[in-house]
Image (cartoon, rainbow, N blue to C red; front, side, top):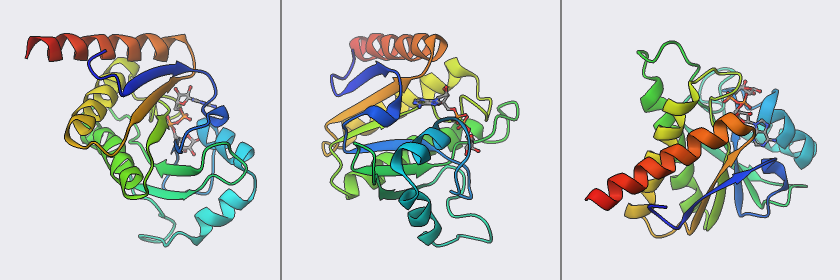
Length: 184
Ligand code: APR
């Protein structure tokens, strides 16, 4: 692997003992399905209360697309939840790649500011929001690798695949990044 601080894992992100898990939320931060629903169920009702306390950027929007917000993890084994909002896939010409990269970057910046050393990401936007998985995996791995190279504060980033297709895409993006790094 190009960077030993990046690791792949499979399964349910809500079970992980890391400093922070990332939630693929929506702009309201009021919960939803997919990983968002799983995180809210596992963290308990105090998570929704904490999200409600987050100041709205505009009516109904607590976290604009591409940004991130942090709360405690409450009943989760993880200490913090970093909520980020991925782009809805609309064909790729509406800033989706930049917004997705921004999710990873802003989540890592917020994590570092809060002394988070280990963080786990789900495949942001790859479920309900319909982002093509190979393209999303390339952005996820590329953005995180660049960020880790530039910033020593985060020790470990775990990419969590929930299903074989995401696992394959992440593994292949990590291999491609290792080949690139070897060629430099
Ligand atoms: N652990 C890890 N990954 C998970 C889990 C889990 N428990 N549950 C689902 N996933 C995976 C999905 O398989 C997918 O690969 O997380 C990835 C992201 O899928 P979604 O949760 O659908 O997130 P996203 O595509 O970003 O859509 C966000 O979904 O529920 C709503 O409130 C959320 O409206 C927002 C939208």
